[in-house]
Image (cartoon, rainbow, N blue to C red; front, side):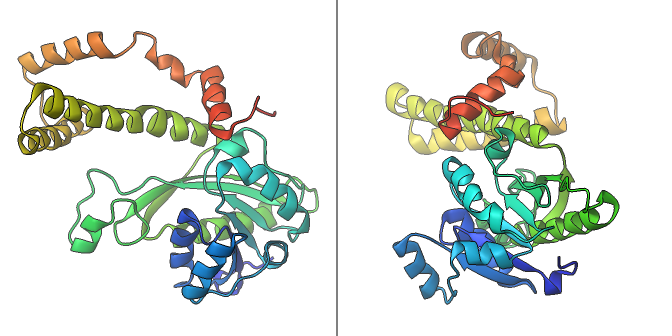
Amino acid sequence: MATEATTATVAVIGAAGKMGQRVSNNLVKSDFTTLFSENSPKGQELLRELGREITEGTEAAALADVVILAVPDIVLGAVSETLVPVMKPGAVLLTLDPAAAYAGLLARRADVHNAVAHPCHPSVFLERTTKEEYADTFGGIAAPQEVVASFEPATDAADPAASASASAHALAESVIRTMYAPVVDVHWVTVKQLAVLEPTLVETIACMVGALLTEALHETVHTVGVPEKAARAMLLGHTQVALANTLKGDNPFSDACLIAMDYGRESIVRDDWKKVFDDAELDKVITRMLRIKEIKR
């Protein structure tokens, strides 16, 4: 297996998809040899327009030191069943979301390492200094972001953790930093911990709150009748203050605000909401996301 980024080969499976394009756009700027695989005719046409040569999936997987599965979660299991058997011993299978890995859907081989890496996206508190950084709300273009990842070394006795696994881990981090660049830091956790972060912390809670704010804005404008520009200005500014005060401790809320916050919690938030952090609830949401009957363990 290649141990240096300059000699490593990376295969992007699903290279014409939304995330496939994002990671590919950064990989083509690097010293990695990058192979692009895409099944859909429309996606293949897009790759050709981008000047990217198409390699058949099993061929790409057989040649690569790191195989990135940039395909929808619901097909990860089937795609891995096809590609993992042809991968090189000591290669790394890298997925972009933890759900399938947590659910036990990915094909496994004792001599193949497994990694998952999910971008944190640029922080709401990121100090942006250029127009490009302001425009990059998702990350991976100009605005620095952090990444959370997990790494499970191969279990084959012929691949001792102290040598080959350490090299594979280092290569995986190099690929992760490249495909999500610019990256501030990579935080290493377990697959389960990554699944608690995504979906529970950021999708079940944070993204849901974002959608709730949008619904609240709609009610304020279209039901109550407040002018939209006034409502939007008030909401966006106070959202920034609310996050700064609660997550950074910048300023204390006023006594009146604390009373209104208590009323909001009583009126909107269920008393048992923290159950979403229970293992059974994590399993429930992931089975829904992957459209499966149960978690395989």
